[in-house]
View (spheres, rainbow, N blue to C red):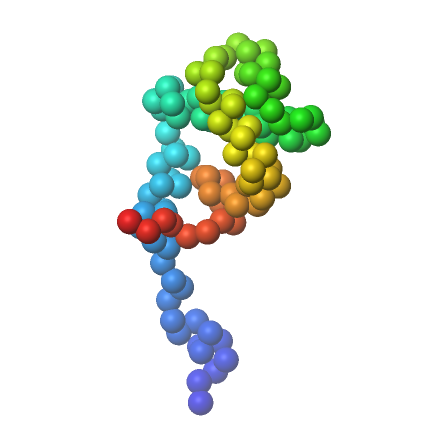
Length: 113
């Protein structure tokens, strides 16, 4: 008979998919200045949506644009509309629970290639 602790620790822990690990590490370790304009715009809209959500304000293209402009930034006009539409279709609470960034929130596995 093996001791209980030996049974529990006898197998190595499962390793995460190389694709999902790389995607998380790459975004978490990249300075914002080195992101493409599209990635910066998406990040600005994400932050604006999170701020509006935390404040209990309506998450729409107008409020996101105002917040981004108040921060002294600008994005292509379609980004706030696209992001607001996605948030209204999926729900901000669902998106927050999905996680998926470099912060280690929950979320699903990597996408199939």
